[in-house]
Length: 361
Image 1: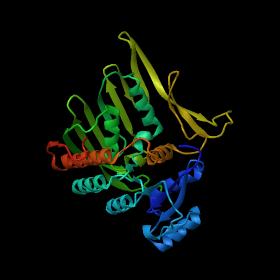
Image 2: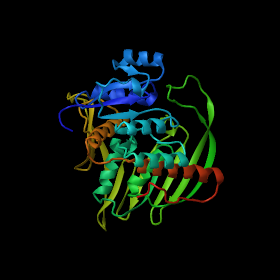
Image 3: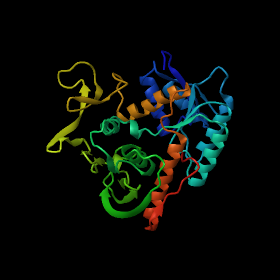
């Protein structure tokens, strides 16, 4: 990426997600800088300027010519995103879009075809694959330690995020799936949400969605309960099975040879613990004597999801400078499409089959 920090603008800078990009830019000033934000509401814009010291504008047209970003981050509601993606493509500005790129299948097909016509440079900020533990798991799979991988169970996040992890763990491209689904509802004490910790004890109904995606020789199991990823009393889970081994959360069970099992742990290595005085940050993840993940942003103090989004930003800067794709519009559309089919299978109780879409390469 060179020595100069990549400059980007944020469209929709007042939302919860936009704050991620601002925090990361603040923590990594030598790598990425926010040169401006488009915030339609004047009062919100003023508040953002005070908080972050970044100039805000009411529309793209108001952006001064002196701001010449390497790319734009579009962080607006799903319904508003496609309009901005097309407008930025017409201006020749590469875009890092939020998930999902459009709310429904028709919207995704229209958007994909229009942006393809315009020759748009678009990637999507699907960060889960870049979270340290998921990245370490992909390294383990890539090293062949599990052998030929055929099964993955993902109980981490909702629909398209989970599908993106399933496809990464199984090495699935645009293959079609046969999908079955069901829902079970049970009571649970409400936990934290986006606005913070709970203020009182409250019983809510928790829907748990289960789906079985058969890709023909490869199986993905989806298991997610509402707000599970924020809950204090529900765990997240991911497992991957191959013919030579299994990853079960942080436990790695593999064979040295057919008669010799090895049981390893994906161990997180942090600085700043006990007598270590190197500062408080994550160094990486080891499996036995082998590094399977190194934190590319050490010693910056970022938590896992911020490390993942920072990875999206770094890869976007490389892509905008004619580097490789890392999560294309086609992949984002496929993951959201399969996510919609999971919801359909759960809602109807019927078996659903995916069909090839215009973006399937």
